[in-house]
Image 1 (cartoon, rainbow, N blue to C red):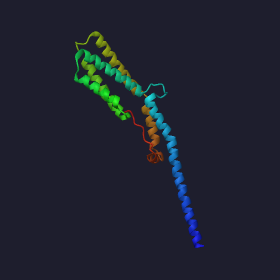
Image 2: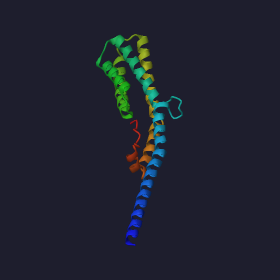
Image 3: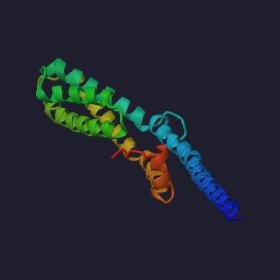
Length: 187
């Protein structure tokens, strides 16, 4: 009889362990199934825009980079290669090579600063023709327009909302186990 009771206790213990494992597994799968699509949506907004229309930070960074490159090329034609032109070229290369959102933001900040310095140097240079000055001014205006568009983009707001969900219990702890992570902010 005592042997039979210990077998029952062992069976109950194994059943409870299996039940706990099943609950933990279902929580992990549920967390992954609910948060992963949201994470992918946030990443998609960075690349394709909130409505999938291409109005996104990625597009604006590309256009900003083109305008900065054009401004540097125009300035270089008229005044030769300067430290500010080199800085714009290097910052543009860094933007092209940036992989993460954080790296893209750092390159963006460097490029906008370098572009500002180049514009200040070049716009009043007497060696610029009227056409070159006009084109450089247009490039600078395009850069400023992209900066304003990026500031108004919905990506950071969506990423912050997602990050709030990820930081709550149980997602915070289960997410660590299944690889769910916070979205990087473009800041």
